Length: 328
Image (cartoon, rainbow, N blue to C red; front, side, top):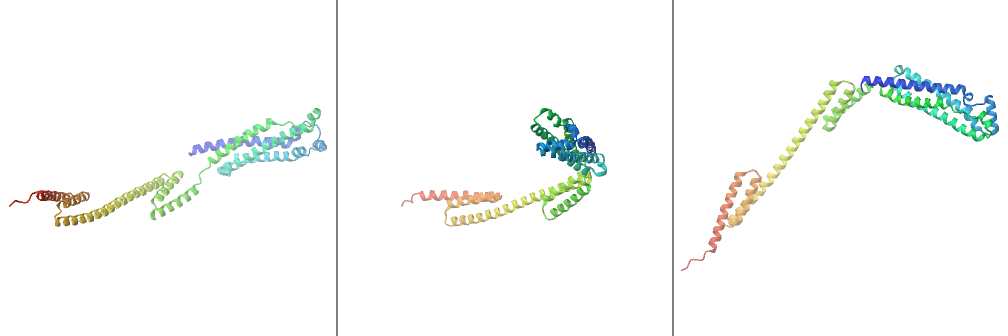
């Protein structure tokens, strides 16, 4: 992310956090200071308000309105104040830390505001069921201040979103990236020396990526070039190994074919000794075929010629065997 984009994120996050925290602090302070006088039409004191519901046996109403809610309101006010401080003094505190605390305070703000309005709405319904007399309900009922709570909740949601902008705007921890690059290069060197080219290629490429994040293009180019060099060497090694394997296979196959040809020629010699010209011709044709496979065309031609010669002898021998014996 560019510096200009980070600065834009930081300013946006600061405004969102400031607006949400100020509104939250105002709502918390107003509700904490005014308490029953803003949420009830009762003209008397808080003690008289308590006395009525104790008399009716509605202890939860008294506890929620006089103990739990004031605590929630003061907590909301304090969360708002902390949010203001982290929005205004983000540079002194640290952008990353401010983003984390803005996220925490925004979450707490939403939780406090939602809890406060939920308790008020619940007790409003509770009082309606306890107080049957409409005239008394007008005196002891609760007016839930939606006009204060819902804008504060909406701004707290934006405050929450702004915390992510703040964390995104945090400057890069160069020391951490330099340490990571150093470890990556050490592993890459070890992989290269121990004959693990695939791992070395990947690690040098990672070192180049880290260097780009550190805006060190020269070093990044160096590590990318090293990665390409190892890749090319590895590819060449694979090609040479494949070529060697083929040569070895060919040598082994040649040796086998030569052995087969020697055996064939021995059989051909035995056939000639027995004057089995037809069989000898067939065997010499096999020797010619093997010689072609071995790339020895001259020998193949010689064996082919020998086979033809024996075929002629075989034909002549068959012809002579069919002639009648001479008469006296």
